[in-house]
Image: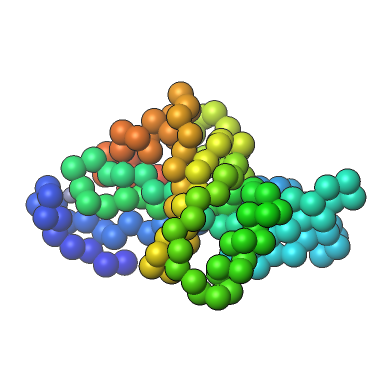
Length: 166
Ligand SMILES: [Zn+2]
């Protein structure tokens, strides 16, 4: 991993990797057979065809600011969205069209850094102009994840989180 002398605190840092989930929680908990039978999963899209309903997910990024640094700790996560949203986003994605759009989504990964479940947190999903994955803007909430998103975390805390999964 690349290290550099930090402009902000003068200490040698390692670049923070993003903490990514390969799939939404709702896909992970399916049996192997059901994954084959019910689900279609790509890098950025996931659809689960349950008997009584169809669930749609897209992959996005949640950026937690790091105090006194220009860096963010990035979580690669999935949100559930409506059929209309996934269809709209799919078109944009396929056409590689850069447009700023705003959707509604609910977080669908369990981020282990939080005691209270992160699944179901309400999110605004903002597509980006530069071809990167959409960014999340959490709805106001007392949840620590939302507090961290608003207030930031220390760099030491970010490093601790990275080390706890790698
Ligand atoms: Zn620093």
